[in-house]
Image (cartoon, rainbow, N blue to C red):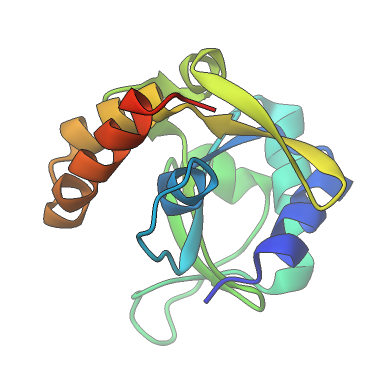
Length: 159
């Protein structure tokens, strides 16, 4: 399970531009589904890639489910050359997405975000409408399972 507070504080301390998406965002909107990782949509602006690399570097990020011994260098250049990263860190699983199915890139995600105060900090969190769009577009079985609850939460009044 991801150490949510520690991971978010590490990102915020370096002023990384990102939107909380996925299961953590759903939980913040009231979902009862458990999540074990932190999913974020991040800005691909070069200064932000440097800040993101610097923020996660002390957490020893490694590619999740990659073959053992696969060379992996964690830095801004790796982020620039890649797009989506599923990582294991010292604080748990962190998934970095440059684009969200059904939503778009970081700029589109920001337009569909709300602000939530957590751990004495303010974070951008994908709205319920954005989450519903992303879950529909992804069409993974686990995403389709959460749709009825997210839609019910929307009907009850979005945060």
